Image (cartoon, rainbow, N blue to C red; front, top):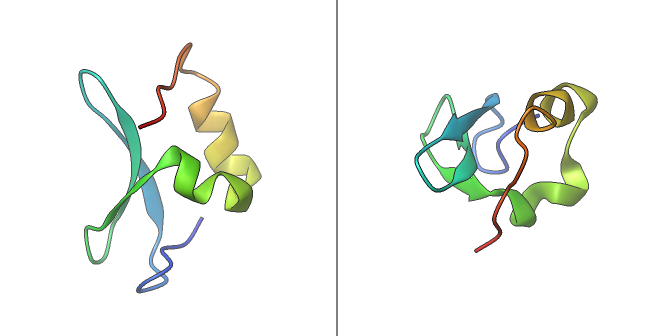
Length: 56
């Protein structure tokens, strides 16, 4: 999955109470609900490992 701003790869960023997607280039973070429609199979597979994702 690619960043909307700089087109670099997004990675899953997990913290105590949240899971977001963070750009490896510019560092911008996306809440899951903002990019849910654009998720690719690889990112979905990573997110499937989490039992609960809370939307802001």
